[in-house]
Amino acid sequence: GNSVTQMEGPVTLSEEAFLTINCTYTATGYPSLFWYVQYPGEGLQLLLKATKADDKGSNKGFEATYRKETTSFHLEKGSVQVSDSAVYFCALGNFNKFYFGSGTKLNVKP
Amino acid sequence: DGGITQSPKYLFRKEGQNVTLSCEQNLNHDAMYWYRQDPGQGLRLIYYSQIVNDFQKGDIAEGYSVSREKKESFPLTVTSAQKNPTAFYLCASSIAAGGGTEAFFGQGTRLTVV
Image (cartoon, rainbow over the protein chains, first blue to last red):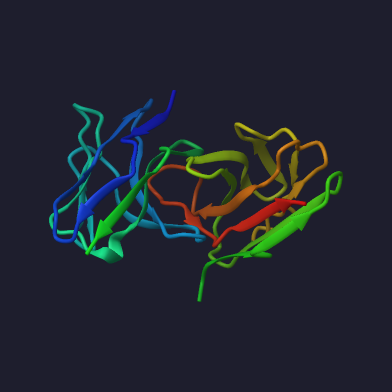
């Protein structure tokens, strides 16, 4: 079947620290992979995506590489800001559906 | 601007009442989805629709109903059979169901049973 597992939070970092949020997946076929961000009381916004193995998605300083051999899509950012505080969801799209991880809350302190 | 509009933003329901959550998109997307989000948890799929006049149950469809009479509209009814309806409800759409295209989300409706 299809599923996504991501590291539990909350993750608390100081401003300018390096961020990694781990995400692994199980899927049949050739899924697309996504990272979404959710701010309090709002819907999800697409942060980045990758549609095939070895693709790297990037946006606003965030990056993630689609690793088929390790079934992973870890989110990284070299220097986080207070404004990056939010909940981050890893997701995969396969056939007719999207599957989401449980979300990782990131708190960035000034 | 193109996007997905959910209304209302906040909704209060009395025990035993049915309520309908609205979702409208002007992105010309074929596929639409309803998710439920509980505090500190991920998204659980309630129903999805790939084309007009067709929809499928997701993982937690019991106590919910939908219709897809128009491409741009996918309303969700929370019936009195849903025993724990208090949650944040998110509607989404995509160009085609799954595949390489991403899902676009509305701003959500927070439903509270009073």
